[in-house]
Length: 68
Ligand SMILES: [Zn+2]
Image 1 (cartoon, rainbow, N blue to C red):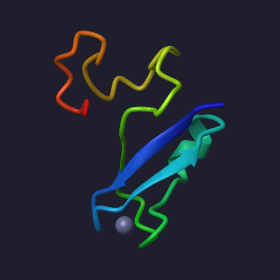
Image 2 (cartoon, rainbow, N blue to C red):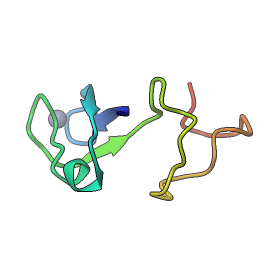
Image 3 (tube, rainbow, N blue to C red):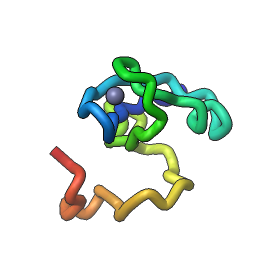
Image 4 (cartoon, protein in one colour):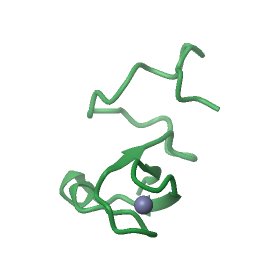
């Protein structure tokens, strides 16, 4: 199952969450301040699976602004 890294938009905390399905992802909150205003970053290792959320451009081209 994928582990995603999230960044809290409220306090800037980065944290990892196991995501079982899309419904579970909707309930993810910041581990520090419990805000639900979180943004998913690149997965640490589940990068080969299809991205269905349309959250941003593909990082495969190397031009992804979120890659680091
Ligand atoms: Zn937070």
